[in-house]
Image 1: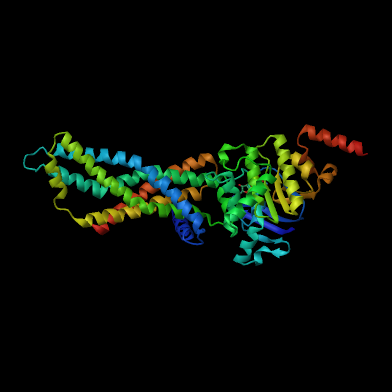
Image 2 (image 1 turned 60 degrees about the horizontal axis):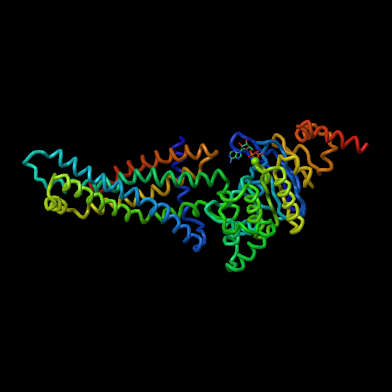
Length: 245
Length: 255
Ligand SMILES: Nc1ncnc2c1ncn2[C@@H]1O[C@H](COP(=O)(O)OP(=O)(O)O)[C@@H](O)[C@H]1O
Ligand SMILES: [Mg+2]
């Protein structure tokens, strides 16, 4: 019952996000601030994780194809496929559900418990639009982040494979180029856009409608992380089935 | 002037306000008193339009709220200022930006004009060197002053304060009370203040409404509250031994 109610409330909130917009000069600044917090502020950890995960994928693949009948360029091929199809879009989004998601829930939740949201409404502001719309717009830049993640993941794979002596640079690069399907990139970025929207809105929902005090802000962040991840995983499954299945 | 007629508000099974009727005059500090959880905040937020009453009417200078269209409600909003319990300053904005915010939202003033008004109100609340500070960098008393400045910057006709001196030391609390009172008289504002602070009741209680179990249990002025025999009121107001003694002395002196 509770789930169903939240489901409905979530969609009502989304409608509210796109109605009664905040004055543009104010909104512009809010968007710039969110780009700084949500996108720019996440680059460090994403660069770090992507690079090393790419490396690990390459090493794992290399270690698992000991057989002389399997060509070495497969290391490059597998790294490319895993990074572009899953590690960059999905794995990084789960990390972001923790980083960006809990930040969104706790910042909006704190505004709720300290009555800042009431204060906005008293001043005639559509608080849902004011707080959530700029986050959705800022996360339109999320595909760029994932593109960086893809690039660095593959770079990390290449470095690990070559410096570890698992394959030669030429073979790895041959693997990267073999059987390349542009539609896989379309699929990856379609997912990414869906995840961006989920990352902006589900944590916002849990922050905006929370009740209680500081303790509940913490609980709301945890709940938001769980649900954001679950929805990302489910949407990932559905989109994969639809686009590739 | 605000008139409240038979105001009811429930949250699910919880019937918080059970028919409140009273009036608040302009140029006066009107106080709502009552225990924690007695519905003071719900009452104030109903006056602000943040809660929709289940039953009853609220009239703002003879304008019936429930008969207003969205446009008129929005205009009414502009005539209201609110000081929240914890100040509710936007913590990502500086003091100056906080105070300027209602002007940005409600008016088409040029920046210079807004800046001028912000300077005037910040000076009025005796804050002259905190413009560029963030709320986290100033004391609780200063935050309250900023909250008051923000509430009055757009020249409201109605000012609502939710426990304006909770969390302040007694001296600062009295200063804040007096500031609100002065501003009320100066700008002829209809001010409604929630409090459970007996100092405020004695200092600025020109009209006091006592809420108990969702009803208005008593109303009168701070002069009358000394004399009343209403048991609910005396039990609440004189819950401390000190106040009981003060009351006793006061009554003896008068007789
Ligand atoms: N938004 C809300 N939703 C549900 N119940 C609420 C809400 N706001 C207040 N209440 C309930 O209304 C009652 C009165 O609360 P409140 O007005 O905050 O009391 P006071 O301000 O006098 O301490 C409490 O029982 C509280 O739980
Ligand atoms: Mg209260």
